[in-house]
Amino acid sequence: MALSDSELATVERGQPVAKILDVKEKREVAAFGIVRVQTPRPFFVERFRDIEQFKRSAAVLQIGRFSDPPRSEDVRDLIIDPVDIDSMRTCRVGDCDVRLSRATIERFRREIHWSSPRWRDEVTALARESLVEYAAAYLVAGDQALASYDDHKRPVVVADEFRSILDASHHVARTAPEFLDYLRAFPRQPLPGVESFLYWSKEKFGFKPVVSVTHVAIYTGRPAVTLVVSKQIYASHYFDASFATTALIDASDGGFYLMYLNRTRAASLNKLGGLAKPFAERRAREGMVQHLRAVKERLERDHRAAESRQ
Image 1: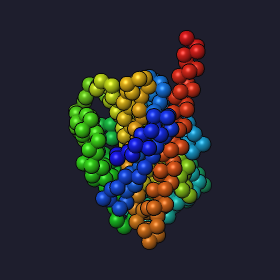
Image 2: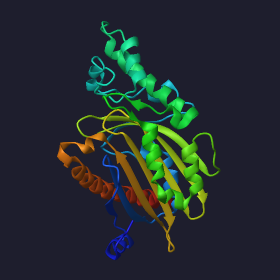
Image 3: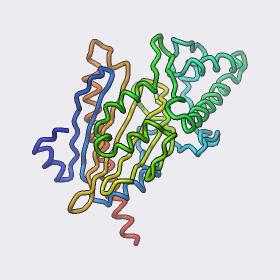
Image 4: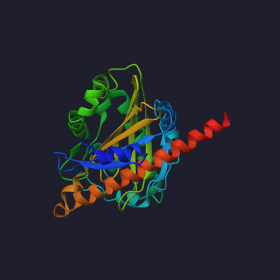
């Protein structure tokens, strides 16, 4: 990541460092960050498993973890934004304000009783049901079950996006090639030391809240290193794909280094005459610093509280 001596010194003082990495794909922003955390490495994993608490922030409006297999009860509290509900009335293949596949768009056109006074309730119910079915299909078939976003004239094949991102994930290939093989083959090639789960969330972003589904895989099969991958397999707005890798590496004198790399692709980064991407990169870098600082402070505070109770 080409950290300078001054950046390394900043990390050793316990402060986060973030930078934007060069990428070939114009639709992609890659943000890297590192911070030193003064807790045991397994403490991070313990907290991360409770994803609802770990991601708690003002930006996360709702969040929930899927059962295995996913059930309708998992999303019963999900509130579909009224703007998205109204958008479904005019949604067509190639022209839709919500990111959906052709099959899902046609299903909404076919199954909703648009003349009924309760059509908005029907849209909400079908949106929740579609998320559960999508999550369940992914757990069975992996990337083969991923959607093609057909909301615009140019479809986005989500599986192709992730294949491209994984091909460029040299950091994972160097650290734990067996984990990269697991991610490529999921769920057909189990790997000892891996635990995984799916969660859904509704988060503030841009002009519209984003409902997303994310696959988390935690790999503890290597000594002194833990790898955590978060793969966003669906997003209702903006994103073509988002893939984040967290590496936890033990420090020689206690604690661990938390290194975080987030790669996000969005068609909108090619718009506004090329101005959108620099703006997105600046926000990504600033957001990375804030995220790492918040994670460090929360982990160290919670660990001190846990020790005081013992």
